[in-house]
Image (cartoon, rainbow, N blue to C red; front, side, top):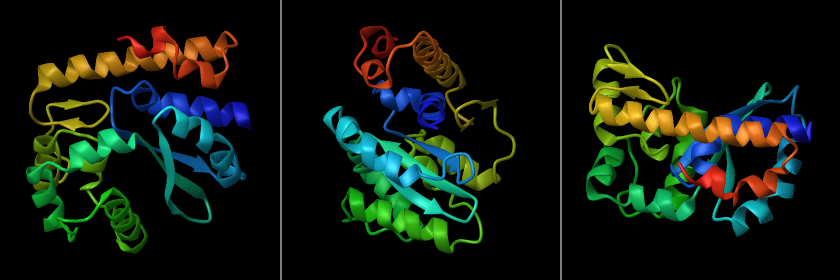
Length: 192
C-alpha cells in the first residue's frame, strides 16, 4: 500500500516534488489506499523538511483528493495582483493568506455542483490558459497535456516535456530500489 501511495505521488506530482511546479492534485481511491490520512501524517514531517505540504482538499465515500504543494512557491504565484483579481471573481478574499485561500477552495469543491475551474490557478497553470478554459468551457485548446493550453503552445510543450522527463526519472529510480525520500533531493531528479 505504501509503495502504491509513493508511486502515485511521483506519477502525479513529480514536477512539484522536484520544485518545478507549485502544486498538484492527486486522488486516491479509498478502496486502494484506505489509510491515506495516516500515510499523509507519516509523510508530512519529511515532506515539510523538504519544503512541501500535503492537504486533503476534498473527500467522499470513494476517494481522497489531495493537494501536494510548495507553500512558498504557491503563495508567491497566488500573490500576483492579477491572479488575486481573478480569484476574487470566484468569491475569494483578495487579502486572504494561503491557508484561507485553500480553505475557500476546499469549500468550493465540497459545495459546488461542478469542479471549480479556478483550481488551475492553485495548480500553477498560466493565468491566460485558466481564463481561456473558463471562457471556452474547456473546448478548443491548442494543446492538451498537464493542463489545456490556449496560449504559449511552444513554451508549454517544452514545459510538459520537462515534467515528463522528471516523472520518468523518478519512477525509474523508484523501480530501481531508491527510497522515496532520497528522490526528493537526488540531483538527477531535480535537474531538468
